[in-house]
Image (tube, rainbow, N blue to C red):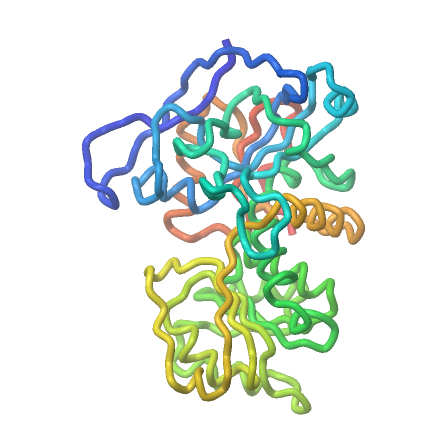
Length: 365
């Protein structure tokens, strides 16, 4: 029987518990008329997977395979013309369901259901085979390896909506953009997308090394957010003729509004795709007086996923890979990827090679 990786239940309170990984056997899936059977070759981690192991994510369950990102080959299909078109193609999976095309948010009355590790969606990508509807895949861009392709879906989609849909004209030619927390998967894709759209992008990090790597990838410069009054140092780096930011793309929260009010132009935008520093974000009077907007942004629609993949294909954008490990049953090595994420030492995506030809575990810039 095919194998999958799930979490094993042990006693513990949310935030204190850390569920161990386990190998489970699952029934071999058979595609329905409009479905595809995909043999997965690679899958990648996201922060939500760590939160699931800590029971800090809604709907955590012990029977659904982990991970939302995956790449593989269609090995069998249902008999509909839509599904048979995909036979033998290399594909990546849309990492969620319930959101077709609305610019506002998911249309489904039950909300958006992300793949991996929760009872909200029965599918996950840390397994050998998966069956999905033919409308939930995109052909993997030809310039990407399987490892790179698996690194794209969730962070690419999240960054695309944050930069393009929510950031708007401020992330186009001539715009000044700050991407916080460079080194994370979403931040790196946001840097790539905004830069390709013609914006000048600056980055922040707690690590000088990560800032230097961000500059190698196209950032104009960066600041250490651990330093006092880092916003003043960033202002000094901005062009004399436009010494302000148009957009801040942020996944941390914390004091981003207070700092942003000193950096953004009147009417500037803070796009928040997460709050890793805590679930609340103070809004200050200085931000009100400058007409600053905060725009929440989570994942994206099926239409945005298609647009993002085509943009990556057209502009030959490559996700940054921090580290890979080989083998679905190599739980110790997979645990090591989770440790990288817990410590925040990664720069780019963490990927599991499930099968097929082994690729290098070195970072790819």
